Length: 237
Image (tube, rainbow, N blue to C red; front, side, top):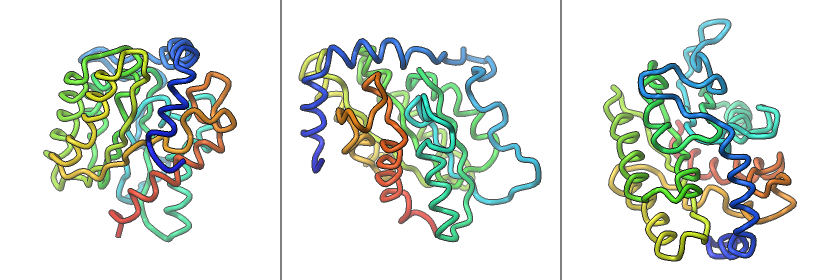
């Protein structure tokens, strides 16, 4: 698909089914409470390894889309990015900090823990569950802004990539317009590379999504990896 409009029209035709599936599937994760340890499904020690690994970290913070819901972790797009890095001889280590069911508020609360060690590149995919719940886009904006600001306080600061999401049409066109506008505005304000729509070419395509109609298949994740790689590769030495 060549534009956002096409997948969005497909989503509109299937809105009720997608909302029902999302309520079932995306709500299965739990957000960490403020001051608590991350949920069990979150990585327990994202920077730990059997032996010291001093490769710069590319940290993916996201929802079930990043976590690879319903798939083996090796099939999720962050793992596919690691394979591309290795094949290209680029010395980076990918950390997948995706958490199913998480909102932007949950990602904001987790970030301090996730930035315990330096991060070279931070890829943020959050807000999809905010849109599913009809959360005020201004609250989503504030949470993502706080995430980006916190990242920029790291010394040295990581390069930033922001993956944009789309809201479903059931909350009306005004809501969709406001939600859509959050991502490019935040990217411009914070010097982040914008992925205009993370699910470009995947959203609404039955063969690329699991039976819930929301979460990509292994092939769908290969498409996501292509999209993310195009944004990520120019940032890497």
